[in-house]
Length: 234
Image (cartoon, rainbow, N blue to C red):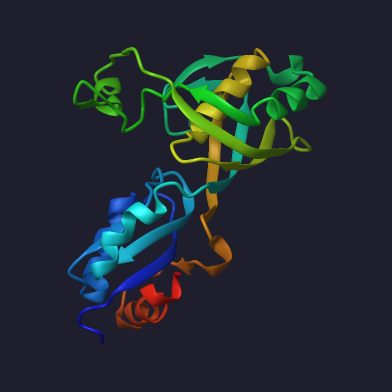
């Protein structure tokens, strides 16, 4: 086994794991001195998580502006304090009043550059405190909107009141906020009920290593065999 692995490892993060859980598990399994990632995924989400191994951690800045692609499931009829299904329900309403043609127009209106307000349940810091730490104490503080770009957004409304959207977006975009805001604009509470990151920059989920069974030496060897050398990245 390589004692000092170096390179990029693209994994499919399992549901329920934090991004740091994956980092620490990988570090332990492949005996790497350093492992980092290029963009956090919420525990509820699955999909592409790019890990940087060994000296590759010094290249993290190269991935900072990568666009991400997501497939998101949105459920209408209730909203939550976290904007996703892990939060406490804050409002309920009947989806029967939603006009699907209007909903389609609203979703399409999200395309392009815009200002997005980070949700309270996020790692954004205000005066040195992470918003989710304040939210857990029941506090709501003023947040500064951030500039994002939705490059493309497509929706499948066939299973309404549960819909899916495919979103290609810039860094810093909160899909949870989009799920919440869509409901706001059609006057029906909504929340994010599922999320898969299908791509990050050039890396797609089709090429990601399944991380759900990483428990033994064979799995460690599989991870090592899928590390992409730095010289291949150019």
